[in-house]
Image (cartoon, rainbow, N blue to C red; front, side):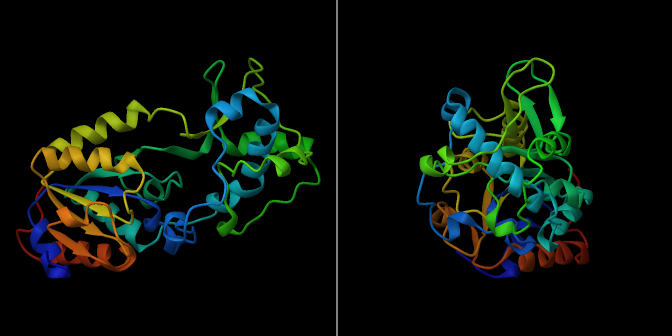
Length: 282
């Protein structure tokens, strides 16, 4: 196994790439890599708890409302920008991301397949209506005028921990769908939900078509990204891993670099652009 930038450039030169990304991609934008700092002391509120018990419904929307703007205020970093450059050059088939922060899309990458959904929309589980998160925020703030938004990205809780005592003590007033009165849910995949086929299907197709699957900023401890990576490997793709900590597929990697994505991905993009014949159109 090699661990140099030159080895990574050599592996990727003239090849079709697919990036599979996780929380480590966004740490330099200000979001903590939760899996890199240990698991949370309590499990998160899951979809069954949320839809059945009004206490959990209230608690989730309280924690979501006070923190979502922290994520919305984040900006793409150099790693996101590098993937956007590779996509624009025709080298990158797309990004299959486990992140809900939308930073790849903001950086200009297309396509981006959001395997765990996105934080900036709200879905009605009754009628299926989708609305912008900011629109819902205006309703919530009107009903909870004393609410203070927390703008510290380190406190982001799009899906909060299942702290029953805190939830029962919460006095927040949530809302339901204006159209049908149904349950509103953040546009993310909650624990207990299936992955969206609109994202998973194209990711699997790209995994079958790519020459190199590039694992960026994820340990692959969550099975979602592993589904895509495993399909790429079954289809004969080479594997490169760029992640500060250990990853579940390290032993299978053709190239393994223990460094930040904001350092390595821009260098990879620059090196491929600078070498004649290394860029291969899709």
